Length: 205
Image: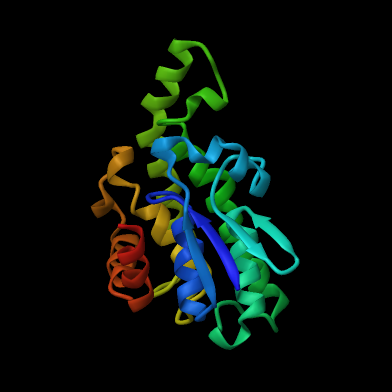
């Protein structure tokens, strides 16, 4: 059985939803950030980065959302979460998820985790001030150039969808009005109604 380590309201939500969509046999394990459990010795043995998600498999532990999502899709091919037989289509999925991981999530993190990049209070305040603009710019690009609809890659649901949904739930907290992005907002509402998303919400709440 897989063991999945997550924290509520974190990017781990994407992989958690994918596990449900895949019908995976897994045990969810909450890492309580309010108690700093991600920095405790027991968890650091699982993920030395002190972050979530982490997925314990029979072959070892995986971290980083794009890697975990791809692993779920590969190990549960019947779920159809990625076009495993089409290298170009699969590359497009990897490109989209990489953008979410390396750019969109980083833009969001400047709001509350600027200490990763600077110590100067003025620099920290400036990074936080720029978050609404930077996050909005990211979502504007997704809305106009990347999102095919009704799902990220078009008619076919994929591992891009729970990842986009997760980051889109942070828009209001980042000071961005989701109504500016009608396709992404409709996608967020469509995702929230999916049984897998509801099942995960019941666990994480």
